[in-house]
Every structure is written in structure tokens, then in C-alpha cells.
Image (cartoon, rainbow, N blue to C red; front, top):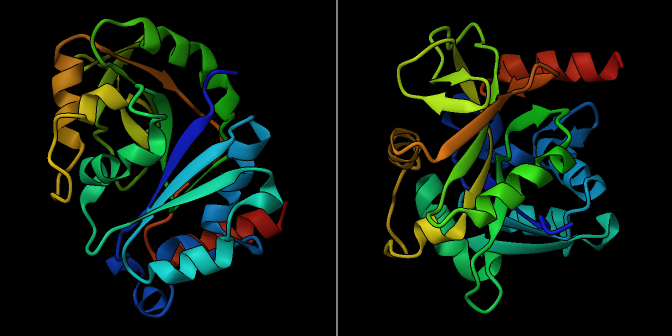
Length: 235
């Protein structure tokens, strides 16, 4: 398996989760008896990933203390601390030395630490190999049916091609494949969102996608966390 590296975004403050996140970082909030981020680590480990980079800012020392070096899941956890959250693209730039081996480009999976999904990460292997062969850096996004809080979706998906305007439209599931070449020329330590890079890459025809219709929850509020907890405990 050539796709062996992943990144979990865990630097956000989790404002909508307050007061739960006043004393605990959002990825360590539990559902079904486990922290949200642990569900992600376990799935990545089962899929054959060997290195997982986790960025953190708010109460990040709790994340490192709770997860350790990753040996209990047979993975290597690497941490990318941020003084203040640098958003998704800024977080990737900051973590590039942990994602690349001696400066060689890598295709890697990135996922939000507050998403619960029963997605099979091993299924992205073929897409990663396709991305590696592209002369320019592209991306592959996992889309989900539009949830009630986001009825208009993000991007169009026809077969496996993403578009900015064509339908049908779906919601980005916060699971993506990226090429480190896309981020090499950006300054480190700068807040930068990833969304403009989605639009640019899609507009240039360098973005593919797939629709995942299994269990997926973007856990944004205490009510959503409680609902997911009940669902997981019910089996």
C-alpha cells in the first residue's frame, strides 16, 4: 500500500460545542464510549495507514497526553502544534515536514477530527495512485448526501468529476486526498482556508470525487454529539 499517511485536523476551538469545549478539545469529546478522534485513528489504522499527523491548538497538550505516540493502534502519531489555529490549508503547510519524507511529495488523506464516518479509507488507494501520476497537484473529495443543515450542498458531482455549478450537488464530507505539492509555495505560520483551493482545483478540472452514503456525522453541537452517542451505543 503506497497510501500510508494521513492528517487529522484537530486545531479548532469548537465554539458551537461550548461549554463542553471550554475544558476539553473537541476531538476528545466522546461518543459511543470513545473520543471522536479515536474512532478516526482506529479506522485509519485498520485501513493500513502507518503515519497520522494531528495538528492542534486549543488545549492541544490534552490531545498529545490522551493519544500518546500511537503505538496502541500500531501507527505513528506525529503532532503539529499551532500557537493559534491556522485553518485547514495553513495547518497543512505547517505540517508539511511531518507529511513528506525528506522533501519528497506525498499524496495523503486528510479528515476533520470532529467527523464520525464509517468510511473505508483503504478504498482511496487507487485514487491516490492516479493523483500521484498527475503532472500537476490534484485532489479527490469524498462527498455525502446533503444534511438538513446544508441543503444546497457544496459542489456538483457527475460520475467521478467534481464541478462548481453542474448538478447534482452534494456536501463535502471533510474527507479528502491531497498532494503536498499544492501547499509547498505557501508561507508557513499563516492562517489560510482550504476552500479557495477546492474551487481553483475543481475549476481547472483536477478534482475527482465520490459519493459516500454510509453513516456520516459532522458533530458540531452538543445535541449532535448526544444523538451520535445514542446511535453508537444502540449498536
